[in-house]
Amino acid sequence: MESSATTTHLMTINMGPQHPSTHGVLRLLLELDGEMIIKATPHIGFLHRGVEKLAEYRTYHQCIPLTDRLDYVAPFSNNLAYALTVEKLLGIDIPERAQHIRVLLCELTRIASHLLWLATHALDIGAMTVFFYCFREREAIYDIFEMVSGARLHLSYIRIGGVAKELPGGFLEKTRKFVAEFPARLKEYETLLTDNPIWKKRTVGVGIISAEDAIDYGLSGPSLRGSGVNWDIRKADPYSCYDKYHFAVPLGENGDVYDRYRVRIEEMRQSNSIVHQAINILPKGDIIASIPNVTLPPKEDVETKMEAMIHHFKLIIQGIRPPKGEVYASIEAPKGELGFYIISDGSSNPYRLKIRPPSFVNLEALPKMVEGRLLPDVVATIGSLDIVLGEIDR
Amino acid sequence: MDTEFIATAIKSNFPQAIIDSNTFRNELTLTIKKEFIVQVARFLKEDKELHFNFLSDLCGVDRVEADGIFEVVYHLYSIDKNHRVRLKVPIPSNELSIPTVTDIWRTANWHERETYDMFGITFTGHPDLRKILTPEDFEGYPLRKDYPIDGRQPPALYGTYRKGKE
Image (cartoon, rainbow over all chains, first blue to last red; front, side, top):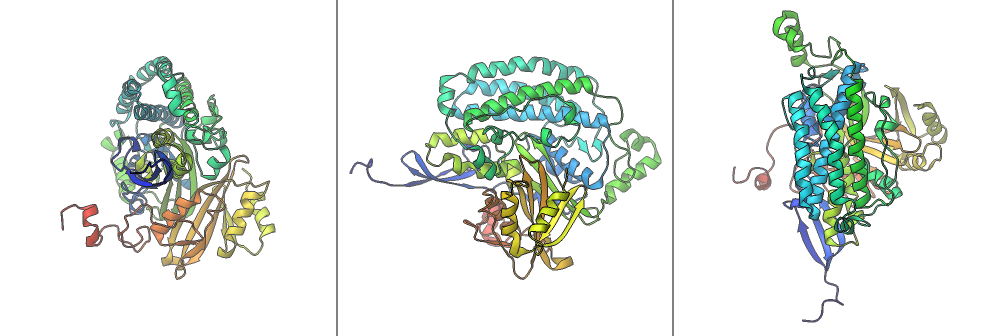
């Protein structure tokens, strides 16, 4: 056989949908020249469950569990984005205590989500120890979630108008303990990775995207900020009392895998500080607004009072009827801008519910980042985009 | 957020393109004629004052039963000016096509593919208009209102959805 070094022979290979580093069921069709990637085509939809269609047949309350199953490592953010959209549609105000509880849990969710990202991202690149460390801390957060909502993954803890129930006894102590320990843990991860020459070789200068391209491709969240674009919805359009918190928005410079790594690590530190502030701020008061034809009555009343039971029953069976109109609301989810667009025709089901999932849009830029690079860079780049197929496919 | 000047800017530059404009819950919605969508979109992105450089979302809406139309809805955002606008373009249900905006925002690529997949709306000039979420043999457009919520797909898809079961 002649030497293949001078002849061009392209090979097409399938990466996924059962590849461990595609973080779910993502299939990439790669055209390779040796180890160099000429063309990458993502194929998605393996997890498509028709969430947007299902929502059209459910009442506004019944949609909350559907949202859990979008980005299933950050269910709380999904619940919040959905609830905020419905609340905007209804034009109602949320009690302050509920808002701060939402912020507190949302930031814990961000830490949990980033921990899963760091664990799997590092594992993909070959750093196994980090995986065990991250899962240890993630476990602690999931224990807190279980205390609060009774579930570990699909929390469905937010209700339209507030949250489902009061924080349980012992919650604050447990969270305080976590918050106190976490910065030291973060330092541990950083000792393992940040200046590690192998880690740097695999990540610095890999998967680069410039700021203009990142905006053009619609990137959001840490993937956008890694390229140095300062856009965080918590700052730009504060929801749920975020304007009362002090935190910094970390930015990268080069838009490579390493900068996105640095941004997320720093974000965890900031989130930890927000959780700490939230514990101290947490005001007394109601956890859910009291609006008769919108919010559910307290559970104790439902069990003991006839009127409350009828009220609960009517709301569950007939649902909320928001005014005709359409709204779009978005939050800074761990992955980026998570938006919901709801059209109401005045009935108890959404006429149309569109989800703007950050991972879907972020993944779109993958070919741009990996074409012309080597095969192992694909693994590093997918990891750095932090995608979850549950929200991509919906 | 001041949405007034956004509406005025578009109205003064494209008086014939606007069908309707309204503000609900402080969100500005402009309904644009199909022929003008590319022009308006380009203006919104390139104008120094408006500078809508970020396409948040693009989706379809089925309004056939009430009005005999489909709508394509664009959610635009400006990262440096921090304002938003929603564009709606009605398209008649017997002629389901609209010019693409992929030349203006590259992110529109997948959004338009999804809208094509879910509603059967074609985007003329799109570089790669293929289905994105449903499998190749999938029949129908699932987010249309006349598509049933339950039922079975054709036999070709048994292997995909229910392996081995008739």
